[in-house]
Image: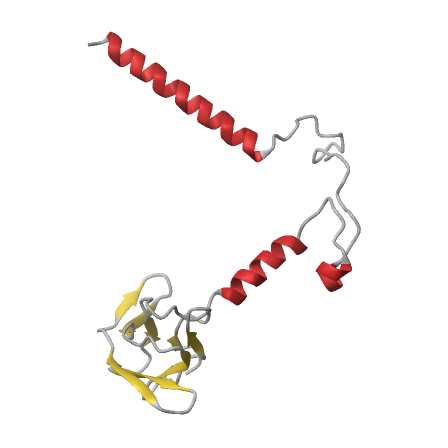
Length: 173
């Protein structure tokens, strides 16, 4: 069955909790973790399935947290097939971290993205004119405060509110 056996596709750190989720379309009671050489490196029992309200499916789980050896694996069952490949290692999140941060850079506006850094996403500075109000086309009149100023203002208001509350409490004693 397609997509019946689910694992974290990014992988797991060696000391992470490792759980397989299995959609119960067949009577499964056990699962196996298999390395790329075809050797079973872990066998485990599944929990009794429960009705997953979000998906509307009956789902069982299996824990293989004691498996910590770095490598590439998949989970297999007798009736429902196998999961996608996943890795265990200290570096499993590095590619995702790199890709997400690269995308933050590539999505930037207001400055030129040079080809040597952005490759095919390079472009000249864009969106450099003041914003226009939706519907009217008029220039937006409200200045947007930089985030650090907004945070400082919120913190100042909270501090003032606490001091007013403290003063009010002292008057009622």
